View: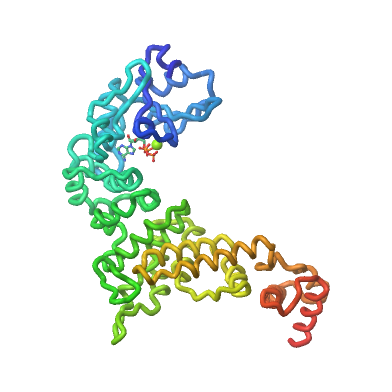
Length: 432
Ligand code: ATP
Ligand code: MG
């Protein structure tokens, strides 16, 4: 910023980093805005390596010894006929115009050490009042770029803010425009929302907007469970469970949001109350199609779907059963599954939360890892080559026998020792 100012340009830190600093939080990155055009930025900062990140939009990334900074020329954005991209981006010499294009008052403040805080839209006041409010007319701002609707919810969920009434009314009346926004942008905002410390209040109070992008949740709202285990409807149970898990695995947040999504579709009732038999399987199918629609990466999608499908799986609290589970799911997914279960149980009615069972299972997992007990094929004292030496041809038979051997070791029928395993493999061969 000093380098830019020494060439008589203006330079400010702007947006999220100013907001976060004023809240006493460490910003995730520092964005700089300047009156200098990109070529002028490059000339003024020629001592540094510069990457032309988005030069058409005025952004270059400057690499320094203590990190990289995005430097963006002041700009205005013209009309948005597609409700997501400006038709034209134009540079402007005025900081005011650059701040006016930003989404919320708390995101529209700038700072430099010469002028201090620049706050033309009342961002500081709104930050203190913990309010998310659009810069300018909310209706127009959401029509320009409907993603801002979800950004409002995301900031409310991460900072515990409420959404200003006029802003919320406009968000609600423009929510259908979210259909024009790319799946990747939507899922990225939703993930941040779910991981927010205050997600519960947002999912509860702004469910009308959440269900615009996740319509499959709509039937869960108000769906009574008629069950001893529950003192609330399906949606309330879901969002309580999301709130209970306070770790950092987005996959778990998503699994919790979707774990009971199949319930309304399979409800039955008898003299003992309501039942949701098979909701895990229907839920897993629904989760798969939701995450495909949201263009999740394959790995996260598979992990979430598996957690939804397995969330009610019966697990005997003994080593062999847990080793078996870990051989199927792997250590990480097993741990996630237990976290899902803990949150799910905690969101059950008081007196029906079987947390001691989860504690026990977690202790067993820890014991297995500590003792380096065998739970996957690669933990066996032999490998595929050893079997090939026995004359088994390369191919699926090797995998089948390795799986059998693993099973035998887990259930104590064979010792995890090379000679013992080879003997047993020979026996399987003879039997075939
Ligand atoms: P984070 O902590 O997630 O980085 P952020 O507010 O910095 O939050 P960014 O997406 O990094 O969010 O955007 C930086 C700044 O750019 C915002 O603070 C805001 O001023 C502006 N901005 C970002 N997205 C939009 C948008 N869709 N519409 C208007 N202004 C936006
Ligand atoms: Mg940022």
